[in-house]
Image 1 (cartoon, rainbow, N blue to C red):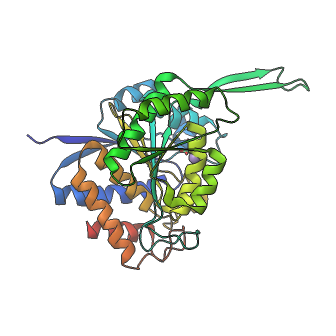
Image 2: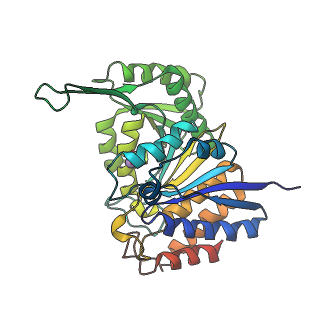
Length: 353
Ligand code: IPM
Ligand code: MN
């Protein structure tokens, strides 16, 4: 008997539910076309649920997630909830709890999509960022001394383990091989200042590189990386970096590929359960207006399908997005300027799979 995938869905906050709906619409269309079956299990976690119950994410849910094939997330973040509570209590808790040690963020400019970088096109902007996703400054190591006094001290430590760094770098090399494009991995760091953390990264990088003689290596400091991403994005194929730098450079990446409306990412545990999301956040300003761009969520679904092994379906979804963009019907990637509603963009893509 053929497998039925079990996909956990967390629509979450703000525009999350609106874009997730369109991603699931495309999933339904492609499952029919390619012929696989799935069930969805919807979870209520997010800002509203927290306000009602005081609960972010119970242990029992995390245990349940471990039995799924994948998770699909809309957005987490609520204007009435103090920053940090939902992000740490839900998003980071899932990333850490399921050991999703890779945050994979493709930066790909599709034909027909506007980029703010003059004279660069789809042939120039096509790389991926492999962001370490369970360590660094994100672990919450640190604390206050003499808080609230003039002598206050705040400490926040970046944790980099040999194991965590190595598995991330190895994933990047494997991914460069699998991508089979420029076959190049660039380490993005700050070896001139962060002389402990990135010393470890650099040593492990060149050590692992020896096992991949077919893959070229390169190094760029994080500040220079942001410069090259704008000036010469065609230099990049796979960029590997730590959690904080990866967070920052992927927002820039999202902008050069056309904006948050089209930027997707995957929180990946290659041996476990992965979670896919549009990287744009909950966009409270646009909530319920049916104007947010669902393409990022649809491309997150494409990454989900690829990761669970439905590669043909993933390709179908990407092709449908490309056709939708080529149709000229979507005027802009920005919320409110698409010339179509959120639902209409979803319908268009679903009709093209
Ligand atoms: C992202 C987000 C999160 C992060 C926030 C919401 C905690 O910015 O997914 O990039 O910093 O990782
Ligand atoms: Mn971010």
